[in-house]
Length: 105
Image (cartoon, rainbow, N blue to C red; front, side, top):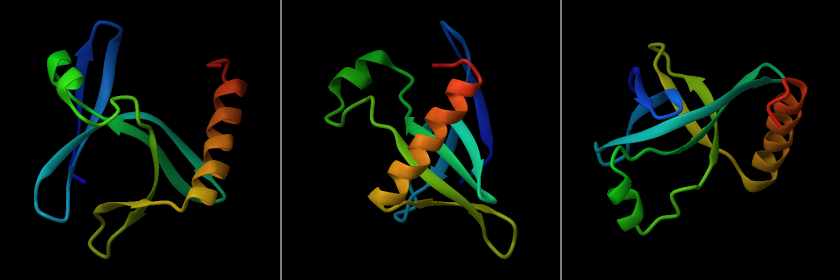
């Protein structure tokens, strides 16, 4: 994952993160939320597309949300790890709880 960048949309600022996939391609995601749970950091992300027309033409569901675990490499770089479904569901419940406590839901 590379450095975060900020983009502005009609509703205000959004956080966009760029990641390098296994093939060396840069992939952008919108950072929706972060959570620290039992000492681990998690991110809720969704694919980011700057152009609305590109979203409509994209075969993938533009509203897919993925929860990833953030770990560090030996040299201090962030690595995002995908979770098994059972763990992802548990962490999603924690995101819901956090957002309800913060009056986001």
